[in-house]
Length: 302
Length: 225
Image 1 (cartoon, chains in turn yellow, red):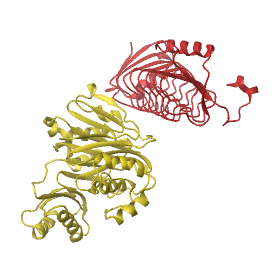
Image 2 (cartoon, rainbow over the protein chains, first blue to last red):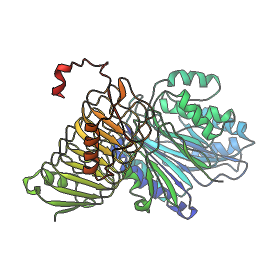
Image 3 (cartoon, rainbow over the protein chains, first blue to last red):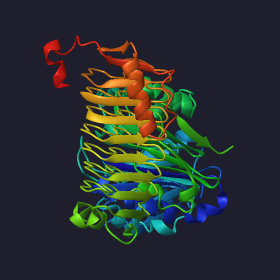
Image 4 (cartoon, rainbow over the protein chains, first blue to last red):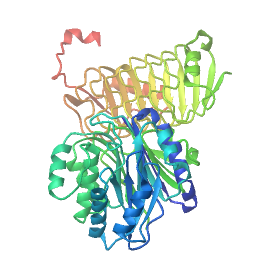
C-alpha cells in the first residue's frame, strides 16, 4: 500500500500556497505509507540556457565545499542552494546532452551524492520517515509552484531506503509516483538500459518512470506514451505523472488500487483517497470522480 | 437528536454509540466525515444515521439493523459484509460495495465502481447508475439491480444470485448467461425498485444468472439457496 497525491493549479493566484496545500494532502496519506515520503515540485524555472538539478547527499554533506567545486567545474555562474541533505544546482548548459554530461560529472565528482532530478522546473525531495518529518525537514509548507506530486510509501517489493523512495525522475522534468506493483519490471529495466535509460535502484516504479522517458524520447506525446504503457506494463498501478507543463493520472485495467480525482475552477487534485482532497479550499464544491480503469486523464498548460 | 461532528469527535466514539443499546430508535446525524474510514461500521440497532459529506473506506460495514444514508460519495468497501438494515448512498460508491454482504438493502443512487456485490451472499443491491467490471463475481445469493450499464465480466463464476440490468452489459463472465425474465422476476424486480425509491417499472431490464456449468449444482438442493 502507498498513498499518492497530486495538485495542479489552473488559477495562478494560488501558486504561493502549493507547498502548504500539498503538505496538508500528504499528511492525510500517512497511514497508507509511513516508511518514507517524497515530493516533486515544479517551480522557479531555471533561466534560459540553464539546467536545474536536484542533488541528494548524506546527512553530514558539506554543501559549501561542493558549491566551491561546482563553480570551478561548471562555471562561476553556477549556483547551489542547499536544503538539509538535498541541494538544487543551477548551471549553464549547452543543451540536453550537455545537461546529461553535467549530471554525470556531478555524480562522478562527488561519490556519495546522487542526482534525483534534471530539468528546468522540477525539484525532488524525499526521505525515509513519516510525511510530517519530511515536510518539516525540507520546509515544504513555504514553497510556491505551479504543480506538485507527493508520495507516502509502504514498501512491498524493494528496500526501505531514501533511494527507493518516490517520486522517481528518469527524464528531464518528468516524474512519476506509483501506488501498486509491477510484475514485468525486471525485463523492462534490462531493455530500457540497453536503450540508454539510467536506473538508480531495483524499484519497479522507477522502471515505469524510465519507460515513459523512453517513449517520450522516441517522440511520443505524454498521452501516447501512457497509451503504450497500458499495453506494455503489467501489474497493478495508479500513476500520477508530472511534466514541466502538465499532470496526468492513469490506472491499470484491473483498477484495484484506489484513486480519486477532483476539479474546481482553481485546481485539479488527485489522491489515493478523498480525505486528502477534503483538505483543499473549495473541495466541498469540487467535481469529484473515480478515474476509470485504463483511461488517461491529463491536464496541460497551453 | 444525537449528533457527531467528525472534525471534533473520533469515528470510534460514533461507532461505540451505534453499538450501544442507547442508539436504538434514535436518529443520528454525522457532520464533516471528511473521507474518514469505517464511519458507522457495525451499527447494531434500529438507528437512523444520516452522514452529511463524503466517506472513505468501509462505511457501514457489517451493518446489522440501522438505516444509514450517506449524503455524498462513499470510498471502497461500502457496506462490506452487511447483515441487514439499509445502506443508501446519494452519490457514487467506489469499488467492491456490498462485498460478501449477507442481507439487507444497499442502494447506490449514482454509480458503483468495479467489483460491486462481489461474493454477495443474500444482500439486495440496487444501483441507480452504472457499475464497473467484475461485479457480482462469485455472487452466491441475493439480487443485484443495475439501472444503468454493467462493465466487463459481469457475474463471473456466479452461483445463485440474480442480476437485472437495464442498460448495456460490456461482457458476461464465465458461466454467467442471460436468462428469461418471467412474471415472477418482473414482480420481484419492481418491488425491489420501489423499495429502493427508484422508478418501479421493470420493463427494459434483462436478467442474468448462472449457467450452472461451473459449480456442482444439483436441482435437489435448490431450496437451500
